[in-house]
Length: 396
Ligand SMILES: NC(=O)c1ccc[n+]([C@@H]2O[C@H](COP(=O)([O-])OP(=O)(O)OC[C@H]3O[C@@H](n4cnc5c(N)ncnc54)[C@H](O)[C@@H]3O)[C@@H](O)[C@H]2O)c1
Ligand SMILES: [Zn+2]
Ligand SMILES: [Zn+2]
Image (cartoon, rainbow, N blue to C red; front, side, top):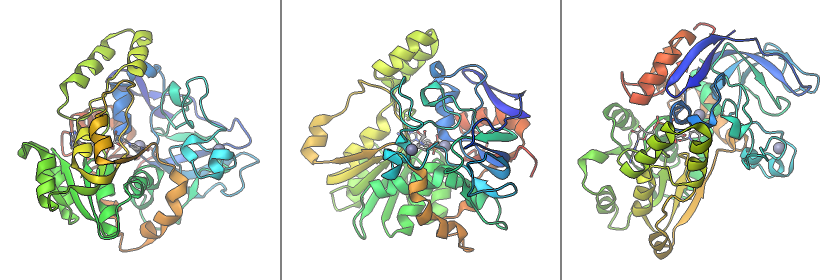
């Protein structure tokens, strides 16, 4: 089959690789109909290169049709239409019993001291071949796959794999009081859906980015937006809009590659130039993150409010303004999304014919598998109006 394969920093190619097959009784194999590229893949594209291995198949936002299942997989059958969560969880361990699916103890990576395995996400997270391919082997398929109805287009359901549960969790973790306000930093796919979900739940949403078409897309959904570059101090601006206090919640939907943070940029470049073993140490033991979006959250949230972090960070000694956080009495919540925890709440919305979250306008590009290398480049540079690339590896 054809798959999107990582060969080196900013070097993704389409290779002919072996078809996946059932290896364990709890596996399934699916034929991919849609598979999205995520902001998290961009970290792998360059900054997290030291944790990648040439030959890794990328992709953790897939859906498709079940081809084959192992003997222990009973809730789905060949021919079913399914979405695959990006975290691989067993559904029955201590963590899964508490719906902390991103920390599943069956698939945790003890050697690396990391949480549950993730599809297509480096040797830190199990080095499981990903879903930007024609076919995918799904481990723990007795639990993970989400069955969805026939009829509506893939776009309606595809984002159940990551974007929607991640955004739902970000809003939940921001603990916005009834009729309260939230600032959303970043209007990539995660920020877009986070803003829409918070608004749907009745919050006043103020969203910040620097990319005009991303700001415009949010405006189309009735979100108040601010262009970071048009304000000397974005937090002051937001305080002025909220009776001088700041928002009840602030959400970081940007992560470690934020714009406007030269120190982290230097560390990331340095990490990229070092041999892998040294660079791995640098990333895991030093501050390599560009923290500006997180600092904006700390500054913008009102006293006693909550900061919710869905953007991915990876450094260890990143400077955290403890004085500010302590003095303001800020709550902090973060982490990978526990995908299946949120599906029952989101499902009625994606099944609603009115499409209240506007899932069908998020994809800016639909592409074949051969166009993947070009898509990564455009997505990284935010060129050509790129917001979300959806790969249709077996044709539209
Ligand atoms: N927690 C999870 O489970 C989870 C799941 C999916 C994605 N993520 C992470 O969420 C983040 C966003 O993902 P995405 O797909 O939307 O990525 P993306 O790269 O498309 O979007 C990031 C956006 O942030 C904007 N931005 C950069 N610096 C900014 C700043 N200082 N202030 C405001 N906006 C700024 C960029 O212009 C861009 O539009 C990434 O870090 C990704 O890894 C986390
Ligand atoms: Zn993702
Ligand atoms: Zn588990």
